[in-house]
Every structure is written in structure tokens, then in C-alpha cells.
Length: 194
Image (cartoon, rainbow, N blue to C red; front, side, top):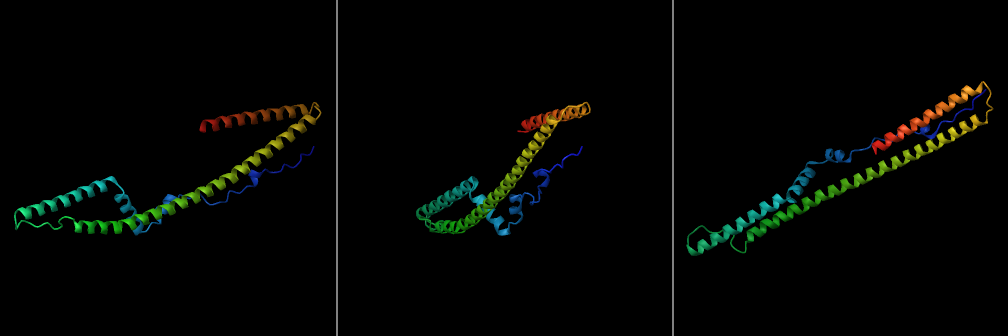
């Protein structure tokens, strides 16, 4: 009795040859220049509550001390002069200088962050595309296995049960039952993992 040649399924023919999944965060961190690291630190500190609180306290001290010195100089001539009397022009200049430099630095940090987000989205797309391709191969392979099993069952059922073929048919039935048990075990494991 000759057995027909069994054709390999799609999963046996599939080659998993794409590059490994990239860690975009690690790549971005390793490729950062000194200026980008400084920009990120400045943006992190400028955009924090401690910075706002410390700056507010310093502004209140600056204005309060200058108002106090202006009042004391007016009340007691020869007293220490205010270095920035009301309307606090020097303070305005310092704050303008700070805003002129922190604004572009924060924008550099935001631009780098948006570039990193773009790379992450691109990486996610690549991973999703690869996953979809592999799932499609698995589904085709499962359909191929179903076809092979149905063909085997049809051949077994079409055989006339002769005394010699009865043990073979019993053995095949036993193997099919074991395969069904293995499938149930796998499904149970998958259910536990989910």
C-alpha cells in the first residue's frame, strides 16, 4: 500500500526573517546629543512646580526688597539705594532674557519628543504588520491541517474494515483522540494566559 505524499503546510514554508523588534526609547536615549540632554533637563525643570514656586518666591523677594529699600531711602536719605525701584525694569529685563532662552530650549525638547513619538508609532506599525502576516500564516496552516485531517478521516472511512486494517484504524482513532486532547490542553493553557 503506497501512501500519498504529504504537502507541507504554510507554517513550514514561512521564514521568520525580519529584523528583531526595536526598543525605540533605548535607541533615542543612546543617540541623544549633549545639547538634547540639556534641553530635556531644562524643559523638565522649567515645566515643574518646584521651578514655579522658587521663581515666584524669588520675584516676591526681589520686588519686596526693592520696594523696602526705595521707601527707606525716601524716609532716610543716604540709606542703601534700591537697585531696581518700581516699575522693576531690571526684573523685567531678567525675565525677558529668561523667556528668550527657555522658550526655544523647551521647543527643542518638544521637537525631539515628537520625533521620538513618530519613531515609536512607526515601530508599532512595523510590529503590527509583522504580527498580522504571521497570524495569517498560522491561520492558513491551521486550515491546511484541517484539510489533511479531513482527508485522512475520509480515507479511513472509505476503507473496508478487513481483519488486517482494524488494528490500524483503531490506532489512527487513538491518535486522533490524543490530538484532540492535546488541542484541548493547549486551548486551556491559552485561556489561562489570557
